[in-house]
Length: 272
Image 1 (spheres, rainbow, N blue to C red):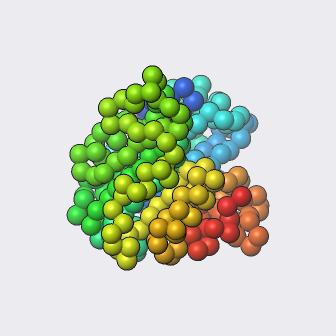
Image 2: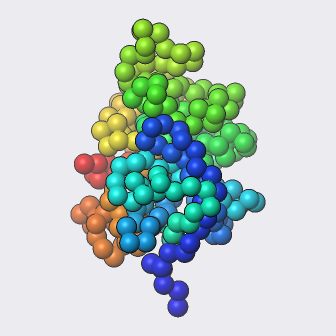
Image 3: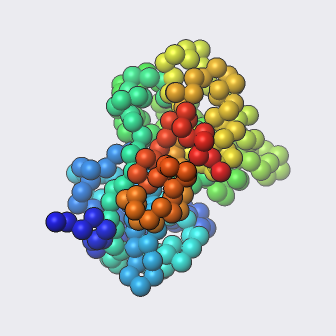
């Protein structure tokens, strides 16, 4: 019988610095057929520890997956010391991911992501961008603290060719003038720019800090979007990732097993 908690070694292929504390890691992987958008992997460093990291992109033909990793703890501190050719240990994928085929296909898909919350939605946005016929339309709002914190600029440039992409920063742009194509203000300040003319055919995905998800979801509900058409993705302290340790449990809900993606009808009770 396979040990579901046993990690396997994989080689790092590419390390790319996106911001001072957020780097992109491309790692070889041999079980890509199991991956759904929005799932996560448990990454471990022997004698150091283990951390859950969202899969931000994957390529079945070339056999790799990518992670957006933020330097925030012991495991990630060591990860930032590694280079291409080094090995890390991984197990997964885990979680339920975004229900694209069941709920988003042929719909008006709106994605709102804040900061490193861009990581879990990037593979789905890329997939739609490469096969735009899979949805009726896609609009994206990306929120960052300031211009220096903007992630995936190359991807954003590609998405802008087909979709309404609003990239906004919380802090006032330098000298009061934002770079070309950049807006300022909270993500919620830009919801009026979205096409919500057909509320029956819209699905909304929100990923980011808990308060950002809470206020964004409440604002969409105020605008008439049914709760059943809003989806949240949670980032909690997931330790075992298989529903055994209880670290991620909120009441009777195991975020690692039942999430990290939740419909707002349930997710609204999980926001801290």
